[in-house]
Amino acid sequence: MKALLIVDLQNDFCPGGKLAVPDGGKVVPVINQLLDKFPLVLASQDWHPVKTVHFDKWPVHCVRESEGAKLHPDLKRKKITKVFLKGTDNKDDGYSVFEATNDDLEGFLRGNNVEELYLTGLATEYCVKATAIDAVEKGFKVFVIREGVAGIKEEDVEKAVKEMESKGINYINYSSI
Ligand code: VGL
Ligand code: ZN
Image 1: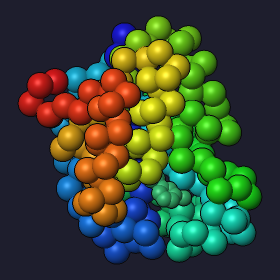
Image 2: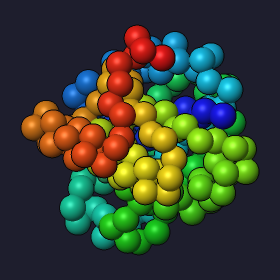
Image 3: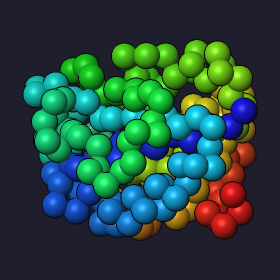
C-alpha cells in the first residue's frame, strides 16, 4: 500500500504567514491533483505552544489553534484520513512527523500495510527532510515529489536534496506518478 503525507501545509508557512516559504502557495494545486492517486492521505501540522524554545530559533509561527496553524484553505482536506500534530512541546524538536505526539505515525503506517511513503509539503529542508530520513531509516520506501514541496532557502534545499538522495530517498517528478 502507498500513502501520501502532506507535511505542514499551513498558513504560517505560506506567503503572508509568519514563517513564509516563498513558493509555499504553489504546491497546493499540485497536491490537490495528487490526492485521488492515493488510497491513503495523511497530513501533519506544526502545532506549537505559545512559549517554546523553538521560538528562540524561529519567528513565532503555527501556535496551536491559531489562524496561522490552520491548513491552507485551498487544500482539499476532506481526503485526509488523519492529521499528526508535531512540535507540541517546549522543545526544539518536532521537525519529523514521526515525532508527532497525538498519534504514532510509524504504527499507523504499519497497521495499514504502508510500504511506500510519498512526501509533499513544507519546508523541504526542515520538516520534509527530517520526515523523509526517519522514514527511510525505519525501512519505508520514500519518495519526495519535486513539484509538491517547497523550501525556505534555495541553497539549503539543494543540500537537503543531495542528503536525502544519498540516503536512498527518491526525489521524483510529479509526472512519474
Ligand atoms: C518547520 C521551521 C520551523 C517545518 C517547522 O515545518 O519545516 N520549519 N518549524
Ligand atoms: Zn515550527
